[in-house]
Picture (cartoon, rainbow over the protein chains, first blue to last red):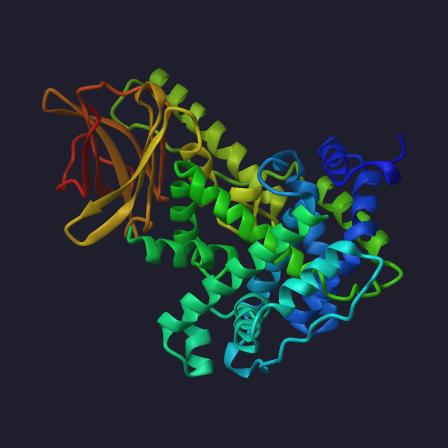
Amino acid sequence: MTMEVMSDAELVMHMSARQEDALVELHRRYAPYLAAVARRMLKDPDEVQQCVQDAFVNAWEYAARFDDKKASTKTWLVTICHRLAINRIRGTNLDTMPLENWDAPERQPDHVERIYVEEALENLDSEEKELINLAFFQGYSHGQVAEVTGRPLGTIKSKLRGALNKLKETLKGGEADG
Amino acid sequence: MDNEILQDKLLEYVMGSLTPEEEREIEIYLNDHPTDAAYVRDMFEVMAEVALSQEPEALPANAEASLLERIRNENAGAGKVIKLEPIGPESVPKAEADETVKEQATGARRVWLGFALAAALAILAYIGFRPRVDPISRQLTQVCAEQGTVCEPVQSDNGELGTLAKRANNRVFLVLNEDPPAGQVYQAWEIADGTPISLGISSSRVFDIAEPLGSDSIFGITIEPAGGSPQPTSNPILAVPLS
């Protein structure tokens, strides 16, 4: 079987056996998306590319520990990339980072999953979108989010919980309908 | 933990805003709380979906070649040896001490070699990786996940000292929060019938006691001069009954 037709989880299994073709195929599938995540978080193009490469090197090294019962391959990769980007952000001064409004991605009719996500994001109010942007994409702690938004910490926490639960419910609904 | 505080911590764990120590506590907690673990997995999946909804970015033409070159170079460096400080009991017969040192050094070397290979890499324990976590926390998380292991924080009057893992067969793995004071070492003791027996010294904050300890004994830690002491010369900072 060629790597192109393998599932993501099968590719990770082959990576754990040190098959570079599997890494190359996983990189082909996900690197552009991880680059988009890193780009949103890091801005500097060189740092973005370094972060994406670090993420795949991590995946290569720890492929044997991947457990598809605990997370899907794409979640595993995104979380690696996100954490590496957060580590890089923490080396910078958060106070100097610009606040961004949530930019909802444009619709991609050929990507059903992305449509579900867009719909889920549409269900959030502007404040919830901003909080997720700050906490997830900008790497702010809850306390820092409270500080930069001027809202009480308790409100930030409950709003974020509510936003994620709302996303979860919408996405689960999308899966069930699909 | 209060439920609302716990939910906040779980959310911060997903968002990546906890300290490594806090992450380790959450991971230990999740190992024993499958409902909360499932919630965390769901939240990771949700945030991954949100992240992947971004427009994909074009990669540099050499991205793939550069990645392959890097993993080949790092694999080539996997055999480099990290110098280990021997950890061994000073007050036990040499042959036995040598065996203990060998066992401990082998285990430690495995961990350190793994981390040397990883260099800038890592794992987030709950879903299989943790970026740039220190190898000690990683090893503790692994030990705590072993069947039959009970992990608990250990306290002193001055606050939390670290985490003690009581493993199957009365083996002990201890991670203290701080390294010993400069010029001194931690020394581990098994106290049976009131008599302390040295289990070894460490100039780091980790003890991996491979030998099973007596079920009615006490496991203790003192701070001693460099090289350790035949008998404790200070009050224990930690004394935990193993029964």
